[in-house]
Length: 238
Ligand code: C5P
Image 1 (cartoon, rainbow, N blue to C red):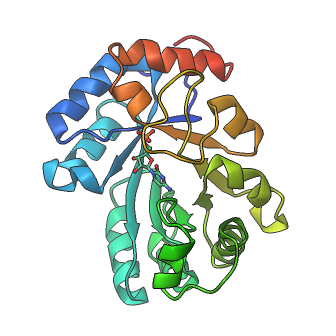
Image 2: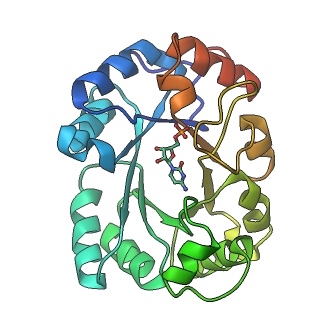
């Protein structure tokens, strides 16, 4: 794999495949059409960290490690300090201020960006009630959690495309990243995603990066699917 001459890292592909071999195979097929990959907990036992390092060092890809860390501050700080030595690009933690502060400390002077998860999009109001999370409409809680995460030192937040514009309107979001999953190219299946938007709409709402998984890795021709998304967001052909 060569470095893309027309790199566009706004598209992040979720490598939600089970192991290193299938991840490498997919990345080979995608070639220069994708320069940024997300690796998550589903691949942890399948060699996810090794794949992250290989894609970074051997193939010059940017890497988003989606581990959604949550623990006491000392443990978060130690975990993030260790991870920041891998030279990766983005890491998710839960957006609780004590977690974000500890992650920012652990990251130290490295280039690793700490992204805060506001509220998991799979949760509805009944789930939040079960967790004793205060009353209020979900979008309001998401925006306030984003604001507090920024104040605690987050470099960015994860948000659905619907919330991206509200978060972008916060003064605290200036110079910070908004990364949106729940993105579906025009005409593709929604799968289990509920609050979706097209790639262009998510970017127009203020997202810096869009995360797309199944519409690419489940496509009969993943490279063509990625190229179609690049076209949709006005990126030059790779
Ligand atoms: O296949 P799909 O495009 O739905 O994948 C989206 C990716 O983003 C998955 O890896 C999923 O776990 C992740 N994600 C999400 N919603 C969030 C946070 C992460 O869909 N709120």
